[in-house]
Length: 206
Figure 1: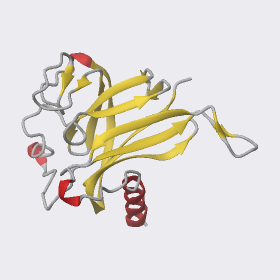
Figure 2: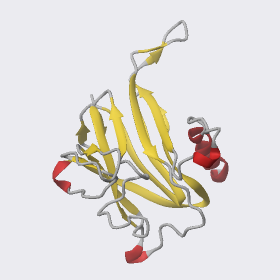
Figure 3: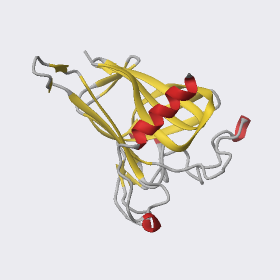
Figure 4: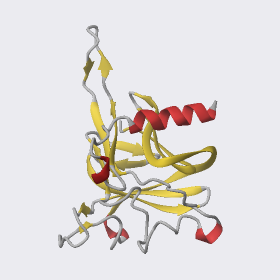
C-alpha cells in the first residue's frame, strides 16, 4: 500500500510539468513545480474562493544509478558538490512562495518568497528558508543572491525547522517535492528522493 501511495504521488506531481517534445535538448534536471492552496473554501457553485497559493519551483535531478545518500558521516554528502547545504534540487536555488503567513511548529514564516535549503543527517533533516536571492547562472554577479547553495551562509536564514525522515521500500528516481495530507488549514511539506522521504508539518498562521 505504501508503494502505491508513494508511486501515485510522484506520478501526479511529475505530471504537472509538460514534457518537452525535443528530448535531445532537455535539461539534465528539468524544472518542476509543486503547488497548493490553503485558507479558502468551495462555494455553492463549486468555485474555490479566498484561497492563498503556496508554490515551490525547483530543479528535479534524476538518480541515474547513483547511491545518493550513503550512511553515517557521509550521509547526503555525495551530491552537495562542495556546497555547505543542499539546494533541495538542482541548478538554480529552489524557491518557495507563500501568499499567507505559515507556521512550522511555533515558528512563523511570513508571506513572501524564499530560497530553500536543507542540512542532511540520517533520520533528521533541517529545512531552511532564507532570503537569499537566486542567480540564473553560476557566473552571474548579483549581490545577496546564490547559484544553488554555493556561497550559502546562515546570516540570511528566516526560519529553520526539523524534518522527520524515513526510509521507504520504494525508490523515487526523480526528486519530487509535494504537499500531502492537506486541509484548508495546512498539511505536510514533503521531499521524496531515492528511498528517503522527508516531511515537515505546517499550518496557516492564525
